[in-house]
Amino acid sequence: MTQPLNQLLTQVFEFGPQILAAGILLVMVWIVGTTLKVLVVRLLGVTNLDYKIGTQAGLAGGRQVTLTKTLGTRFTGSCFYYSYRPY
Image 1 (tube, rainbow, N blue to C red):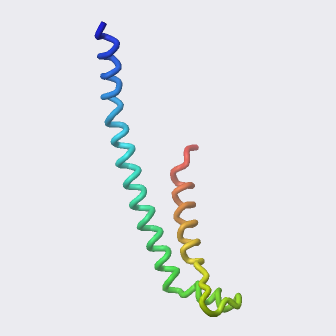
Image 2 (cartoon, helix red, strand yellow; image 1 turned 60 degrees about the vertical axis):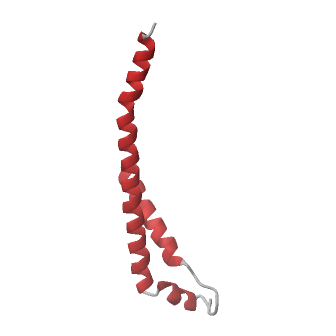
């Protein structure tokens, strides 16, 4: 009578370390991605790309173009998508 319950518990506890490893990998990838995004945004911020494009487009004044954040997010998202997608 207890055999099916023991088998179920055995399967659950054998699967636990895989879930834990997946969680650790997810956190590591999130940290690397966030760090890469911050670096790209800061690098583009140093170049004053927002100001240069904003003045050429006639967006002087209080309106600010946030192109560096858009490019930083898109760049890091594309890097992770193309490097970790299943084939």
